[in-house]
Image 1 (spheres, protein in one colour):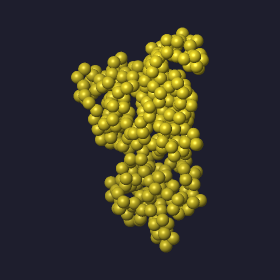
Image 2 (cartoon, helix red, strand yellow):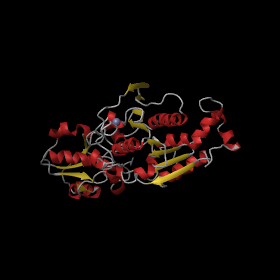
Image 3 (cartoon, rainbow, N blue to C red):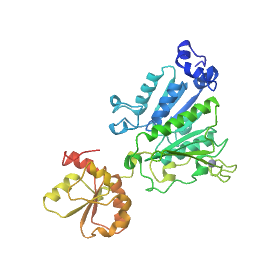
Image 4 (cartoon, rainbow, N blue to C red):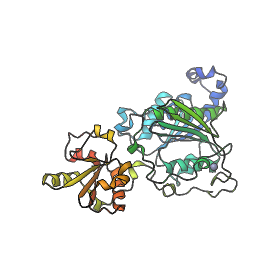
Length: 384
Ligand SMILES: [Zn+2]
């Protein structure tokens, strides 16, 4: 693709051409640039929308899922009309609608150690718009090993972070966080909830950093970690230093090639792959309903957050949020039949492990959670 701009492109980018930090030369740089964005979710949406609008000439998009209704509260690149469509395809259509002068390459795959090098090969900048630790470490390591910047963003409830990890000029993600947090300490977005506008703020900051990197304009967030608290309306900048003993970006690195990230982090790289509960510890909603009807004594334990009870409840259930379970085990009777439930069965699957480890044996996990109860037993219970 030629980096010369046509009359139509010049008109489109006229507001860029009028500012000295961009200008015609900068706009050509944007056209010549190639950026790979890993994730088309809450963070990926604004990144992709703004990179497309800004005229970044080649944008790669990696994701593996389809658009679901529950995505649309924050994943603003997708629309109601694309529910059920591949996320990468939905994203490409929206990006080309915004800007037909760019090239969008889509990869409907999980970003893994096997494909990461090949997928990132053609691109100059990597954007981590993922929502899980295996992908976050993988993007970092690919960036360090190939000498490219990793434009990082992450969110949790009302707090967000952003930085540019560029090992040639500053620290990498592993300088800051050598090891992932222990599994179970970090609930996935599906379980923890997300304040929908937050990834919009953080993803927009990531897009800004990408564009500055391409233009060579301003001061990029290398060696700085930006912390944003949406509830307090505060931004904080923390200065970061390169760790001289970093496992991957120090002069004598321990890691010289990609590793097994799911194993390293102890968690899967996507929500759907959470380790299933062995079937002998599961019980279907229909079976529980039948037992209750026949007068069986069953202690239903709801391990969701109290706020979730505003949406749906099961009659007679006792509420013990998963986070409090370990310290409230004495409230439960080991002799009684216990059925644990949450929204979809993931948190209660973890709660089951907690009870089994504490010696409980008469305990089961409600398969599919209260949402499955709505499908199989009582449709008046709201699904969410
Ligand atoms: Zn490092």
